[in-house]
Image (cartoon, rainbow, N blue to C red; front, side, top):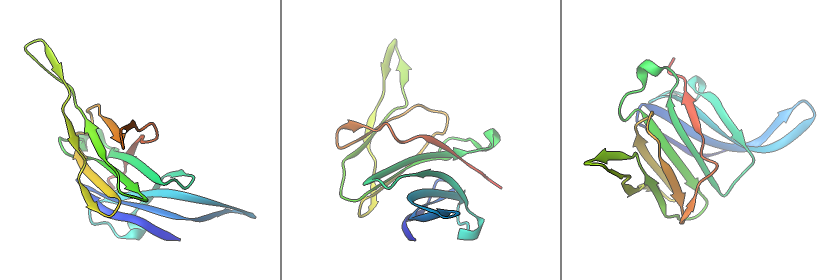
Length: 144
């Protein structure tokens, strides 16, 4: 088992782990996202989402408790096997009958790692190397 990413973003501790997971006699390679409150020990984190190994893994997190969903309590994390151009568009705003959706670069925090704090209730579009990301779902983070 390898930890591909571990970090604190907004109020969340997030980790991406790759390994061979066993279900009885069956073994399957998987990447799994683990989440917990900021600063949580590995034993306090929960397994949130699984997928087959990918060169680019993406996830968006928000607090499970709607009462904890405040501005800046969500997170987007991209882990790439090589450098990438990661852009986040949104949320949309309307001013004087004009709707705009600003685009900004998602900062790299290490080789192949991109993370940004977002508002959990807002809609965003994530592009990686000019292509819209279809795999980055919304994951909820348990705040126990």
